[in-house]
Amino acid sequence: MQEFIEKIMHLAKRIEENNIWRGRECINLIPSETTPSPLVKLCEISDPAGRYAEHRTMKGKEVYFYQGIGFIHDVEEELRAEMARYFDCPRVELRPVSGQMANEIIFKAMVKYINRDRKSGEVFRKMRLVMNNDLTKGGHLSSQPMGALFNYVEEDPGTGQERVVNFPVRKDCPYKTDTDKLADLLDRQKPELVVFGKSMFLHKEPVEAVRGIIKDWQPRPVIMYDMAHVLGLYGVLQEPFKEGADIVTGSTHKTFFGPQRGIIASSITKDSPLSSLWIDIKGRAFPGSTSNHHLGTLLGLLMATYEMNAFKTDYQNQVRKNARALARALNDAGIKVEGDASEGFTETHQVVLRVSEHGNGNELAQRLEDNNIITNYQALPDDASFLEASGIRMGVQEMTRYGMKEKDFEILAGHIKDVLANNAKIKDTVKAFRQKYLQMQYCLPVEQAAPLVARIFSSIFPNERFIELLGQRINKTR
Image 1 (cartoon, rainbow, N blue to C red):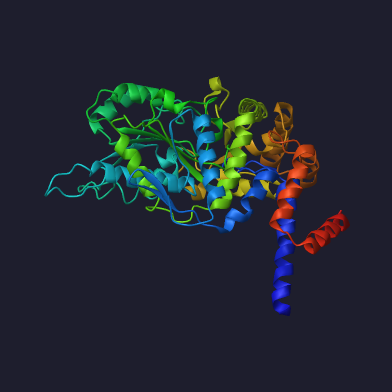
Image 2 (image 1 turned 90 degrees about the horizontal axis):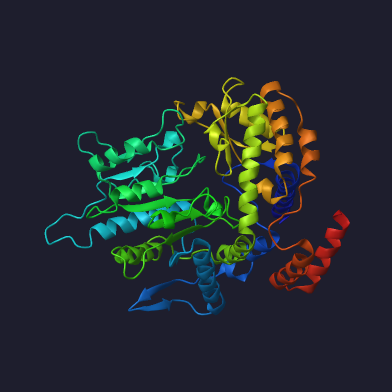
């Protein structure tokens, strides 16, 4: 028992230290992360976190396989409506528990869909060809043959490689698609699925251009946009459904305000030629990919979507202003910034640096971390390997939510330059800088949130003695 207690005490201490370090002392610039609001976090650990609510459509009716799910049923329906409002689309599938799972569901559904009408004696087949962004040009791992696409696209018998073709990129800016070459490539290759979206994501994707090229093909490719990194910028960056996309997938915890989950949205209606594809997507979500779809984070996502729908415009505009302010200030300080300078180097939340003249990107990312600036190293389009990356990738979304504005990011650019170019030791300076940005914005003000936090917390832990002792401990540590 003593060993058990010691392990718990040690772990609790480490959790506390990490919470304080990342939450109060660091400038967090990982583009794929965010910190949810206190209310969202409490939703995540509320009663549904330990429950099940499996369900599927059977004979036109949604059938649930567990009792006691009235509340979470209502939550799921309300979240579906809130997300449909956010995307302005008719179909939303909420059960993926990650963005990568959302993508894999689409790939599974595509294989089922293209085999629906095969005749007797025809061999079950995979997708013949998929078009996507090259991994080395910023494409996301989950839509690569080495990722979630692996089992769902045919191999070329001549090369033994999966039949995937990449968008051509511009010579002057490899972060943008070469639309002049795109039409010919599409016409020659005839992909069955076109996948937009990146993890190194600086500029818009040419959804409308591709839809214009393929709109009269019979059959035409399905257009999918993996918005994992830019889901929280839907509308201000692009509106893929208005541009011709059939499906949007994404993670809900990067630029969006939510806990770690995935989502699928679609413009497919009951009257669409692709209506049976949506049926296959639902079937591959459950039972094809999930059983328990993590009901605590589902509840948290509803709270986060309330926040996003309330503060979307102000938040999105500030993110883009901040990203461009950071990029411009770093460029002015002599740090090489990637992307189209005429677009302010970025149209999203991301800023990408070329740091090879200062050292190896892997080592420089660690140097920044040693000074409490959290980024990640990034292989750039002309790099041979992620192991010898010449880039640093940053995102402004989390610190935007903690109240940083353009002038603040200009100051931060100076700190980043000092670390990268001068190997300055400024950990204490960065810790002091972070103290100005501890109050989360774009959510319920603390005066209104605190009573709700107290109510929800006390309902999670109903033991009055526990609450009393907890209050005493909190007061003592302060």
